[in-house]
Length: 57
Image (cartoon, rainbow, N blue to C red; front, top):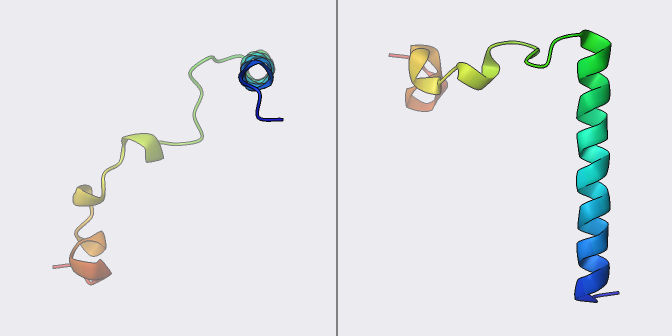
């Protein structure tokens, strides 16, 4: 089962499944850029409480 051809096929099928799942989610929520929150844009440096071992400044 370590054949390069099988690996490529499985990867192709997985990529297709992921693309279809994302398209379905976009169709359901109606927004292609919808995120749960701003966690992707937050940085630990923005919160002193998260700095210095979680003890803050």
